[in-house]
Image (tube, rainbow, N blue to C red; front, side, top):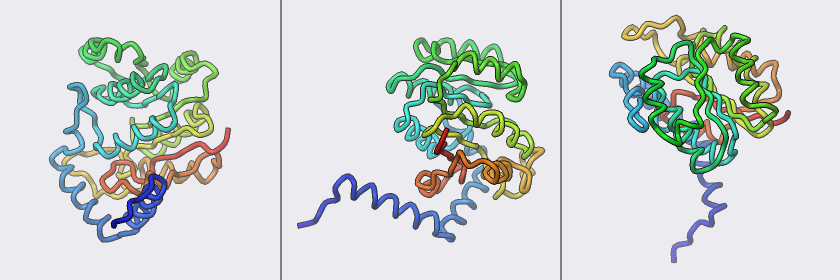
Length: 248
């Protein structure tokens, strides 16, 4: 008779499988090649939630929902709103799991997008939009007024992807994240992509979120990379970008 895994045995099996997946250089290169070729056709822009685009891959969204389920943050701060689909995604999870607010920060949020977000009833009520630079003191103060003394905060950085800007965001927003909660640095994949001729950007290899994250971790011992999550994501925009605070 076939022996079945216990739940704990299955989890341990998945962790070990994830390590092997991450160390399979040939497979990792194949996945990167697919992502590079598919990006020419805006693959990462194809996912929607409640009708609004989410500029990310479904596997990254599932990683974020796993984190939210495990940690139950009261507040999620997303830097970079884009089309608002991710705000609705996080709010849907909070509607089921509990939580207070989703704070979305962007330098520009179109009026029609605001109207569409407001149209989602209960999901809309927990979303707070802040229009302004993520690094302006007025923006940071508005966030502090919203979250108060709470340390049950998750931060997702997904705005301007230059080294200097992301490093400044890391230094300004890491303090909001309490012990056991997560700081996610998006689009670390840029370090591994060739020059994007189809979509020119002022960042690229050597100047991107991953290089900023590497510099941040050299001087900040409050955070560690969550290898369990990072290992298992074959198709991801955020390789090595999932960090957990391990002390206050």
